[in-house]
Image (cartoon, rainbow over all chains, first blue to last red; front, side, top):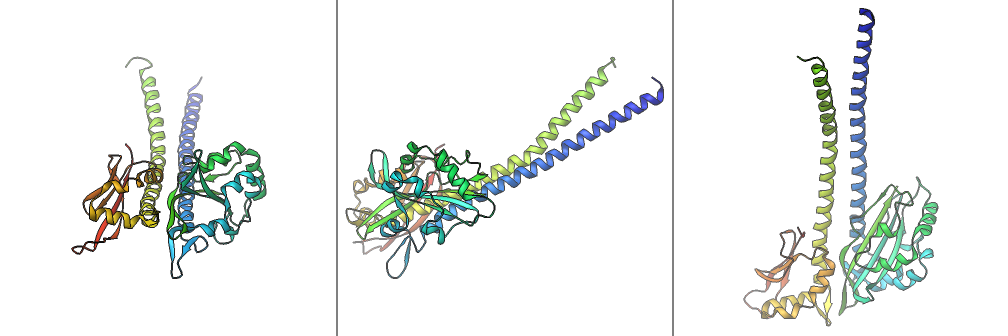
Length: 217
Length: 144
């Protein structure tokens, strides 16, 4: 090997190593930026579920109205019966009840989203399950096919898991098989839920929990 | 210098630089994730303690408002009257760690952990001409 050839190989190696380092730095920067962006979006998804629970708790459609004011966190049993599906009806007919056109979807929902809200009555229990109500909400869907998603959900959900929705430790995102149906983001923070009161009549107000799952595209 | 030693040292330095770059690249991501998780959890738990207090003021027991029962209990000093509340609070607060205090008297002191999240409100006291209102505080915390 002559002197010129050795210099040329050494230069090429230097360029190659510099290129690898530059690519590595670029990969770290772009990858880091993508991870941070994805985490921010996921965090927004969790915040949406918290906001949805708070909006639901004080919604004029659901909250108890005494003639002068709405009572935040006091859910009127009459409104729950009217606008949501009772536990018995949901268990016996869950495939039909997971639909995008619920009454409450007209009042509040996020765009490009599908949400499940469950209210449990902690003072009415039989066999480890609590009495309760369920509704599904969907927002305008421009970026995905809600029908395809709902068909996937109905196919993947294990019917034996449906009664578990009415237990304290149910993980909504696991029962609703959100990972199997290729949803990019789903909330987990309200799997256990917020405390609420359920008003049957003035002298009969029960303690309850509201669980929320928000899936967004 | 022994033959080959310079090459070996260069290799070690190269590996160290690559490892340092990886750590430097991953640190901001890990730090942002930790902060976002902490914020989301704080928001959830802060909201939760507020909802717990609101619920406590709204529910009834034997056709009587629980807030009135707490006020009576505080005034006439009969802690056993509120035992029915514990199973309800245990279900509502998954960490099963909470303190409910009126003035400086603990009505419930469950879990024995450091409490971090607080909600308070004014409780109207009956049969007490000396003081008509008192502050009720609900604190919740995490099991360590």
